[in-house]
Image 1 (cartoon, rainbow, N blue to C red):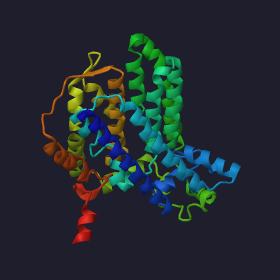
Image 2 (image 1 turned 60 degrees about the vertical axis):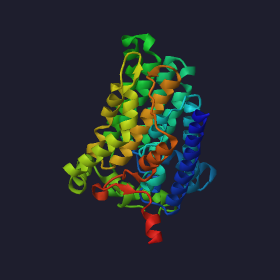
Image 3 (image 1 turned 90 degrees about the vertical axis):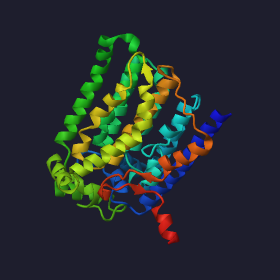
Image 4 (image 1 turned 180 degrees about the vertical axis):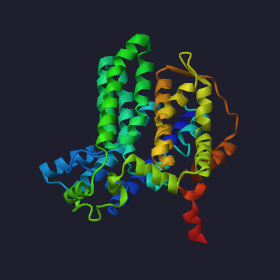
Amino acid sequence: MMKTNRFRLIIFLLSITFLVTSFNTIELFLQKSLIQYADWLINYQAGFVRRGFVGEVFYQINNLFNLKLDILLLVFVILLYFLFYLNFYKIIKNINIKVIDLFIILSPLSFFYTAVEQKASGRKEIIFLYLLSFFILIIKNISPLKQVIVIIIFSTITTLSHSGLIFYNIYFLLLFVCLNSQLGFKKIVIFLLPVFLSNLFILFLIYFNSTFNLSDLNLMCQSIKVYLPNCGNIGYIGTLTWGLKKNFELNNQLWFSTYYFVYYLFNFIFCFSFFLYQCSKSKIKNVNYLYTIICLIPSLPLYFIGADYGRYLHISYISSILVYYFLLKEKIVYRENISINLKKIIVIPLLFFYSFTWTVPSYGNEGKPKFNFRNVIKYFK
């Protein structure tokens, strides 16, 4: 009965998270945010450029069916969030939820992150997270060859939608390796070679076509001026004129410091602690928790290219637990019997403090924790 109550609690809280995240996204779209909303409007009307795939697809749909582009994109984003949450429910519904799972699934970097950190709502990583969760649900039902084809298609979609997501494709590869370990090392390498080559090709394609000049930028802005009157050299769209060098110089000037790195390292340790402990007590066919750390390594370049450390950690965390709970459900991962002998009267306050009182800022915040109830306290002062 207690185990059922834990599962119901998680589903109830995740439902609230979905609603709040959806509300955040709607609000940002109504405000025509120059970051979240504008990013979805980037298209190829002035030529190929990074982050433009989804915007181009919906731009063409808008032209074909004469539908409002902003409404189309909003419905698409909300639908992706809904399907992602539904997929996670399907992944964990048959798992024996323990006390430690409450702390893992409700970590400050987990699902509640997009609810309490509005800057992280409505971002393009939801494309990757949905496709990863969908791949998890279908991988057992298709052959290794078809799995490779799906990985290439999904990784292409995510990378052309946001180039930074290429660093998270390691999670697709991890799933393939774990589900097809019986093939042996050589066959796995042969199967995955097309994936590496396709990702390498896309990376070079983006690298040599990553920026617009001002005339190209203005041309693209003309195509969406009805939906984004302030389109120009401000906000995310304005960064299309930046190269990697300028991006790194600005990050170095505005954000990068020893204090900044240490602050987010502390957040990583604190928010990943329960999950890493769980992994240390688990085995994947004689492989220990180091697989989790290995999956984090490919994302390291992002921390030098950009400054949204909170978002990067959030994507890594969600991806890691998606894969972990799927492998646990399929009995590919085996965990030791971890018993936390705490009474409910102690667990609930600890869970509330750990999961809901603070969050990790998407970036900046001068190295201070972001208190979730600060606005409520200000209201009653």
